[in-house]
Length: 82
Image (cartoon, rainbow, N blue to C red; front, side):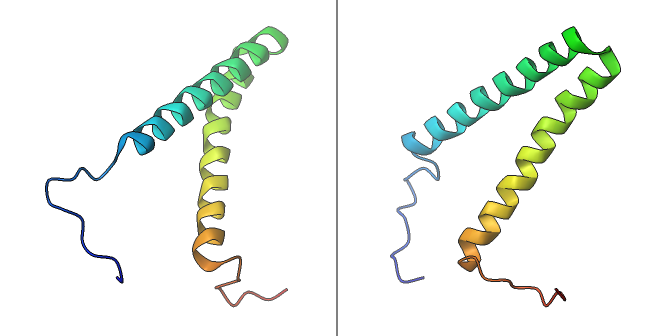
């Protein structure tokens, strides 16, 4: 709230953000398809599909945890017993 507002004509996402989004998409696609191909060669199609679904889900969960740590500075925000 201390920074001035962006100009209305300025895009929400700049070139660096679009590059980062594209690079992340390419890497995640390669890892998912590579894992699927490996599992298909080593196991059956059901396990390969499960792996191909699980890889992006775990990536999303990890990204949410990293975001929460970044926002809170690593502090615990919920009062959970240890």
